Length: 475
Image (cartoon, rainbow, N blue to C red; front, side, top):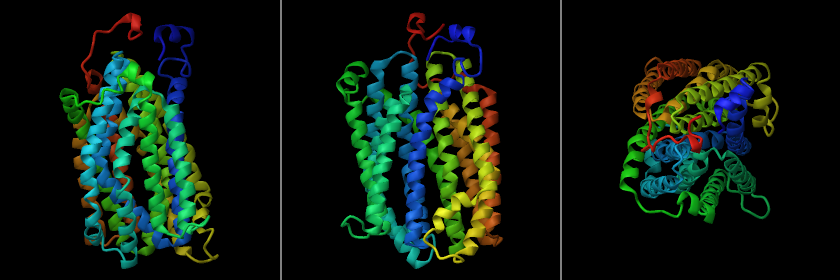
């Protein structure tokens, strides 16, 4: 970050000003690339499994959603370490950054046994979905394997916050891209049995993900514990800090529960749609897999907004925090406009890879249904971007209790609505997706009003030291 008064006076443009286009893109593009690397990896993974069988693809989608749902609360809490790091960084307290990261690591270790304990309960969990027996067996296999990578996912996220909070997003881009490539290569080798490996199908895809997650955790741990980081940021201070841990839980736990509730609502939606039939399940899986091409880059922009809010609030510059959020939203909406137009005009560009290994004319009904579902994705994309930017901005300030309340109400409505549409009113696939679209619109509007209300401007999650003009905190 630079001295905003001098920079604005020299070049008072949208691009050059503090918290303007250049700064936001410099921070967010590596995050977007990181998100896209995993998005592309997941997309190709689903394509590989579709070539294996449509059932394998549908099973991988539903079981990974359940796995991620169980992971959400601890993951969201560990992710919140980045907010502490960003505010300590903005407030020029580098020695507090290492201990903040380590509190997240300790939380990861404490949560891990609970996640591993879900493995023997997989058959019971998937029995509630009432999916076809062949799909259920594949879901159980994939879920149980993924659970072995859950501890690595949490530990990697805690260590990753060291770089995320400081805005060192290029390091994150390199690590995430490398790990995604490793995952993709292992997918190909282990799903289809190449280079002397046995063909393991959906199990191979699961093992590839687990190996990639543990590799990611190891790389981040080694990077954070470098000597110059231990000296400057106290990353070698791994001891429990009760006061800091309590604050991380106070602000981070609501963020984690919000993450859990949102994904749980979405997971229930996916499970209920799966009851409509195999065609509906496959078409929805394809549409959601393709929608990640629009969703995940916006996740990168929203993370950048959270970082900017945290850093500028650490400097006591809520005006710049707001400007960075609006700049992030403008860029996100531009991207969403482009991708939504592509979904409407050339949807076959995204769908064809799923059918390369399918005889011509087969699965025609799935193709037509998927085309229609992509129109629903295009319909909610803009409000989805709005929701993600604003919710991460106010979370970056510490407004997590409000976010938790909204998620609790809206996710409950989503689950209830999905159940009513499928089980009581016997609505079809398009009724379900109309419900989803309306839900995204509503949540987007709620968070827009909360951000505009401005209560987040006075919030902080750290203990602050006096602003020092010489340090660059205030111009």
